[in-house]
Amino acid sequence: MSKHTLQQDAHSTDRPRTDEAELPTVVRLAGVTHEYGSSGARGVSGSDRAVTALEDVSLDVHAGEIVGFEGPSGSGKSTILHAVSGLLVPSSGTVELLGTPLEGRSNRQRTRLRREHVGIVFQRFHLLPSLSARANVALPLVQTGLPRTARRERAETLLERVGLAERITHLPGELSGGERQRVAIARALVTDPDVIVADEPTGELDTETGADVLELLTDIGRDRAVLVASHDEPTLAVADRVITLRDGRVVSDGS
Ligand code: ADP
Ligand code: MG
Image 1: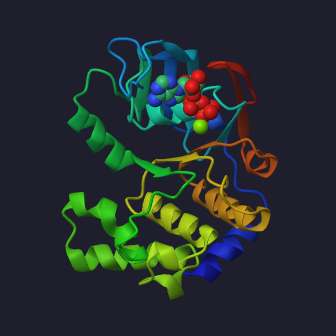
Image 2: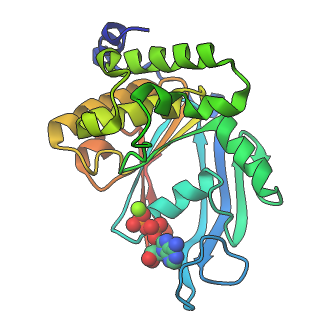
Image 3: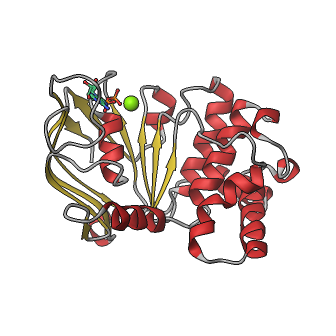
């Protein structure tokens, strides 16, 4: 797929919408509560004090939906995205990815589910500085058993798709912030995941560059679920549905 195709797609009129009820549920949270610092919780900080980051959160996300998470700093946006990605196991409640509950699984099983089904985009890109754009994008494919040549070709296709055909062998340090985030998006897509989780993906970018990145995310959302945490208006404007969090609780869900 060329950059040209992508841009045409991104500028086309409304995305085709089907009744959400007909589309498969890709992410389900049921009664999810998470405390950092309590026994049994993972990702514990140095502090002894337990912090309730999520409280009784329930929501379903369907294929093709772009869901925005908004709320002040500390309201639990990142914790939700980490729970969806299987990066943490909530203190209680259920997280299901494509109908498979994540709790009760070993770290290894969760990692495998994440690798197969979830692509993650972070605010600060998280690219390996010593690897080219292509090698960064190809990295998630190393575990798949795909031969090296095929991995490189797939990475190049994705880099072309995000408009970086000319930057394939560049190191992250040789790229602008917006280009780095495009590399990160290409990396998140390289395994063709069912879910894209993006935590403040435009937080480090200027308005115009952020808009380009959002256009990409919208395009991506066409056939998969996109969960995006943000406090900025333009980012939330691309969402089909915005969920507002306060102190770890869902206070509104615009579905
Ligand atoms: P947001 O992404 O909306 O800013 P977070 O999910 O990062 O919110 O945080 C929710 C709450 O959990 C906050 O009170 C935050 O301080 C706390 N928290 C987040 N990560 C940790 C951690 N690793 N250890 C302890 N507390 C944490
Ligand atoms: Mg956060």
